[in-house]
Image 1 (tube, protein in one colour):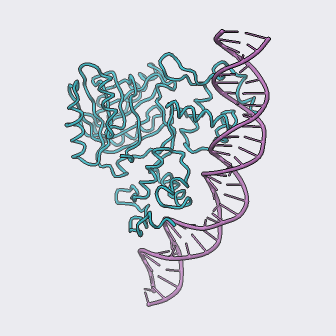
Image 2 (cartoon, each protein chain N blue to C red):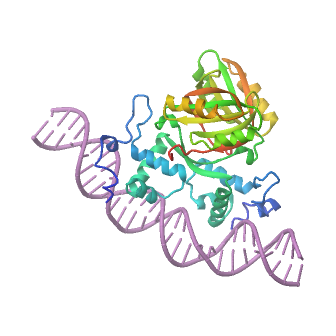
Image 3 (cartoon, each protein chain N blue to C red):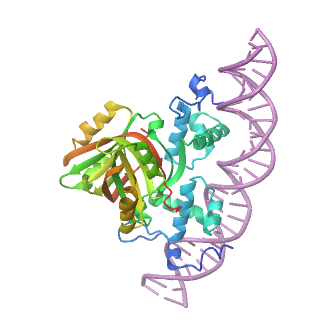
Length: 172
Length: 172
DNA sequence: GCGCATCGCTGCGGAATTCGTAGGCGTGGC
DNA sequence: GCCACGCCTACGAATTCCGCAGCGATGCGC
């Protein structure tokens, strides 16, 4: 029925979930198209997605479940924390001596830390923090982050206003 | 039926969507609870959410629709772009002379820029960029961002590895 | 005080979606 | 060759979504 939408199956499309060498699952064009659909609307019905990508409703459902199970994708509500009662939010740049990844892991274990990324440049790690108020923010940065062994220095950027927040890389 | 879950309506709960002076809608406890549910699972059925927050299915549906329409919340699929074909991602710190907000708006108009926030600290604006490859990244930073009138300087932090990405501030 | 417009919630019933599962088909290992 | 595996489709049953009418409470004007 959808044969014209999926050009006679390539090897990619036959095994859309196999692992590549770095441990992250390989994604074929159809899975990317599904993600793209869900980036526009996380609640879009499977049948509508199927029509867009050339797959049956059930196949889309199975792929979505797999992508969720693998941790490749999550379907969630996102907001601007500053409009939802959290008074202070900040990005913290961190310099590390020794093992960067273990510091990043330690940061990831903190509930107030929503986002952790290892970087190249004048910071080794960037961490985004969401707090109730100034005291809370101060506590997290000074008492918890700076206390981690291996943290050499930190620099904070307190959020004043969120201007853009999208997940639409698929749609361009 | 759910009378025991919502303690005899407070003023807050009677007018959950009214505007506060800064233009962002005021959110009552029930709407926060709904958002919290959807932060755990963006596809959770309205009936299940209703049971959790003490509202009927239809009421939850109306509130969710309103939150989406107001732009308070979006329900979307989120991924790590680096695992989905985008080879280069970076955070760019920007210093501005003159009107910071107009620069932030200009950045927000760029498709490659997924995240823009005005900050206090040694940068005026932070912008996250998602690119296909090095050439693309270089082009965006050097030709487009640095070309904006008012941009005094930029500093880039190329992403090496995303370690954490959550939206669960509600669940703590 | 009273009517009236507004707003949010509930409770339906019908339409649409989701879910579980059985069966088919191509691929790769043995 | 043959089996195991992965992915797909098909389809009925259960669940969910959706639109709407009605109701109670609030706020406003008079």
